[in-house]
Amino acid sequence: MGGFGFTPEQETLRQEVRRFAQKELAPGALERSKMPPEDLHRALHDIDKKIVELGWTKINVPEKYGGYPLGHVEIGIIHEEVHKVDPTVEAVGGMEATSALLQTLPQDVQDEWFPALISRDRRHSFGFTESAAGSDAAGIVTKAVRDGDDYIINGEKTPLPGATIADAVSISTKTDPSAGFKGISLFWIPTNLPGVTIRPLPWMGNAGLYPSFVTFDDVRVPARFREGPEGMGFYTVMGTLDWLRIIVALTCLARAQASLADAMEWAKERKTFGRAIASYQGVSFQIAEHHTMIEAARMLCYRTLWLKDEGQPHTVESSMAKWFSVEVSVQCVKDMLVLIGHPGYSTEHMISTRLRDVLGYQLGDGPPQIQKMIIARLLIGKAVVG
Ligand SMILES: Cc1cc2nc3c(=O)[nH]c(=O)nc-3n(C[C@H](O)[C@H](O)[C@H](O)COP(=O)(O)OP(=O)(O)OC[C@H]3O[C@@H](n4cnc5c(N)ncnc54)[C@H](O)[C@@H]3O)c2cc1C
Image (cartoon, rainbow, N blue to C red; front, side, top):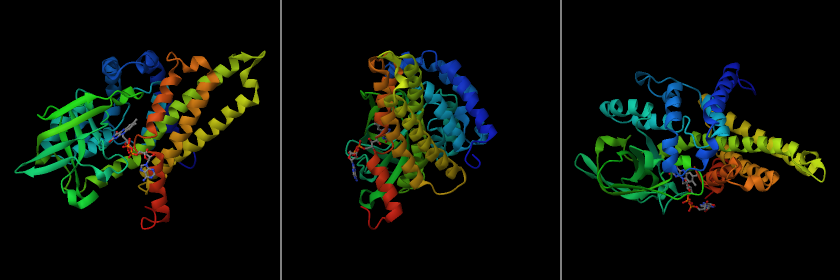
């Protein structure tokens, strides 16, 4: 991004991703949107391989594994265009976060995992939420207790998106329960270790997130699988969420834009009382208003990604973009479903899937109240805002 627009290269990337999405993702997207996660994973096999061929799994991965750098504005563009067409596909996803976590581990572990993750022959996911601790990420109770060269891990994570298809998960644990958020450490845990149990969660949407409930029962993990120094995990989690929230926001806005486009087409064709419904101000003003809100939210998102690429602080912007964009998306998809009428309420229309998805993202990566708390704390001061 330069000035207030995208660069010619970014526009070219958008066109390329759009063509890929129309050619490879559009066929079958509606059928996939209705599949349970276990079927969906199989159905996406060929698309996953095409994403690997495109090189998206090598974005911001170390060069020695074939990786290459790409800006976060560009990563946002890829997600936005893919999720307009197929909300179930993991385009680039959390690969950069996975890469950062894996690079904290010894070289032989990296050599084993990087190639398999890049080819998507293996998968990794990460989760911090527990039954008793969501918004209060420092309130987790999963414990890691040092035992010689290992740690023994006990606890659970739910929802841990992606775990049912993962070969390794990264989780937050308490290594020093008396130290609050400074007692949190992260671990890379291969899911085939004894004591790891994973079961799917019955979610109302977002099948492509593979929601899972994971328990850790005396799981013995080598100390060399600890991600970074003891006690630094909370900072890593917050730093990762700072930009992943924007990707979540853009994927919701993608669903909103697709819903608006569907509704506009419909409104031109659908007649009531002898006229196309688009001719009524009650309809056309709704479209104008939602388009305006979406564009405002997109600007917040892309400016935040640009700030990240410029190496500037962006925590407040990230939280503003996340709660505002998801709120705008929920209202837009809901209104456009009503505008389309009863066909929109059918599972034969993608808009019903989109509505279930965006509702979930009000929670995913932190609910609106928590985003507002982060904004207020940084604006007014942590000493005043609780
Ligand atoms: C689609 C989706 C994707 C997700 N992805 C992930 C993931 O990748 N990794 C992961 O670890 N977790 C994930 N989660 C879990 C998500 O992070 C939590 O749902 C979220 O942090 C809120 O935690 P909670 O659900 O336990 O709600 P709670 O923390 O119990 O809060 C319940 C509600 O209380 C209100 N509230 C809480 N605290 C305050 C406060 N201080 N002030 C005002 N109101 C407050 C809010 O309305 C909040 O929604 C996902 C969830 C969903 C639905």
